[in-house]
View 1 (cartoon, helix red, strand yellow):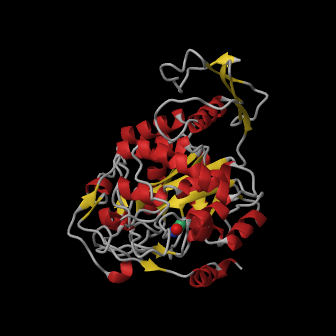
View 2: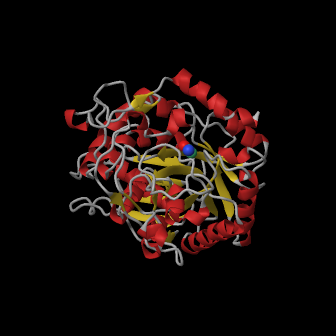
View 3: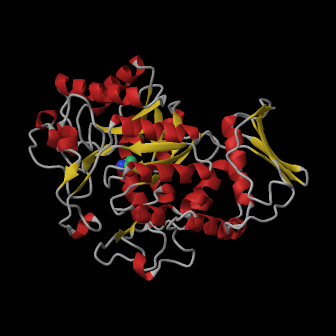
Length: 457
Ligand code: ACM
């Protein structure tokens, strides 16, 4: 065994009876591990450094939820993940999240053995990455004069300017922090739709639009034109992104886009990324007209696009909105903040099974209604704990047993300062009367998805 530096430190009074040794055993799967707790001490062997790291996370979970050190049961745990892609999308475009909060989010997802952070860096409502030669993307595109409060149907606005962006160094620090926790950051520059912030910065990229960064939620009609200079702009942005992010996959969006010629545009961007040794990661809309052969498809509009993508030979990340969109409401309690989407309870996330054919799955955290890290915590936890078991453990899970395990885990999250949603429901101060929602029924949403994906039939 190759000795590894410890990241789990025994507490005083504990070390004398339980030394911890960690090491790599190449016979184990790279992300798998064997954790032994015996009266002689604790041993963690991982198939690779990630496996050791995951063994350490499990060791943390063997302690009770309180921070007080105590005795551990003697156990042997042999463990490995079900899926290679255990992802979370974080939308830092709708609400900017400062670097320390992104790092904290990464820490929390890594603790749950998740290994991909899909970072949604641009959208109609904000451009969050500085690009050399294109200063207005961040002097103009990173700021909006106000934001909607509540879902768009209510047309309510605050009067609070909002914005922020990351420098290349900020993003490199995020990538490095994540890498140390075995998390790959997959950046996304959403194109050719969801581009109003860029068009507001440089109207020549658009189709006659000369307005501001979008303050309303929902999809803007102001996408990119497909002029050669606009494609050069997109290539320059992707070059910069490739310089910062080592991820083999680069997200280029492709969703909810009315731009004619979108398949051609996606093919151009795929060819450019290929020249940089990278592959496209795109939403399932890129299947219309034929997605680039080696593109990885994020299937968000239900089972049908997922099956289409698999049948076309793509690797697929399952992220159906009705099972894995964590901005959707957690209960029908009137105290839930800004209830949108379909009902997505803890047990619904836990019951989701992505099947055996996919690369993995991803929970998506769209932040229109999460203006602070506290709001993100509330919407993400504990549903992300359920998701973590969906993508790590074998199928056939027992929700009652999970819920029992969750109680001490919530104490652990509480000790880390996570503003999780209590299992008993929202507290009075979680409600957001000033930001009303727009709850949907599942049959209505499924009918809408069927219509949205009819062009793939
Ligand atoms: C999406 O929700 N537009 C991917």
